[in-house]
Structures are given as C-alpha cells and as structure tokens.
Length: 161
Image 1: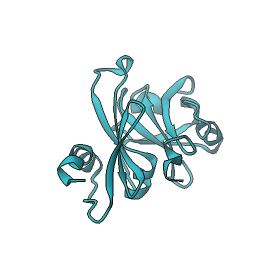
Image 2: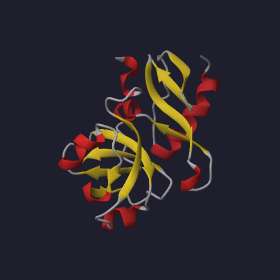
Image 3: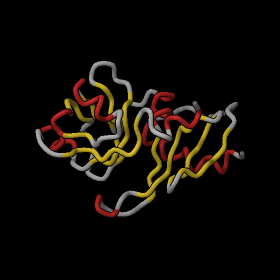
C-alpha cells in the first residue's frame, strides 16, 4: 500500500498523540470492520476511523488508535485510569461507570474517544466515547462516564490471533 493512502489514517493521530512511528518496513493494509475503517500493520489493527455519534456532539469522522495501536506507541493522551474493581466489567464490554474512574487526562471532553487503562499498571483495557468532560468524570460517583466500543477480547482485538 502506498504511504499516501496510509497518511489519512496516520497524520491526525501522529499530531494528536505525538507518534513518531512512520510505519516504514511494515506491511500496511486497510480493512472495513462494520462501520469502521482500519489500518493494519503486519496484520494487526493499529488505527480506526469512525463517526462520532450524534448524541455526543457534531457528527464527524474521528481517527483513533486501537488498543493494539495504543500498546505499540505507549500513548499518554486522552485516557482515564480505573480501579481494579472495574476491570472485569470492562473486559466484558460494559460501559465504564464514573465510580470506577480514579484519574482522568484533563484534556478529555464530552464526545472524545478515550482509552481506559488500569490504575496500577497503566495498560489499556478499553476504548470508548466520553460521556462527560474530564472534570465532571473526575468528580462524579454515579452514572456512566464512557460508552465502551472496543475492549480486550472483543472481535477487533482478536483479529490477529
């Protein structure tokens, strides 16, 4: 695949997440996964492009790393950390409840895609749509704070297995 085709997937996240990987030497391909477009590097999905839901703000196309992309690049932006009690639920695809969130990247806004990591090790567990801004997410003890769309063990995670 030509690097020009890949640029549409990569340029946005390179700037947003300070990624320096130019993907040279990787076998690159694109794929459709339901309504999402994926960029795969060596058969591993690392970037997804999807539309923001209407109920979370302006409908627009968002490009975001997959969980495997987050692991590849050790990202440190647009995240929240959850306590140990939330992890089993998230790994079954449940939405993230505000009570489980311990720390939030202060740049997170309602309608952003965010990744959820475990508080202790910092490893990614899930990705979802923020239903609250960082400040509200940090202060809330009730309700859903993230609508989960991708988690460890789901069909997207299992593509390369």
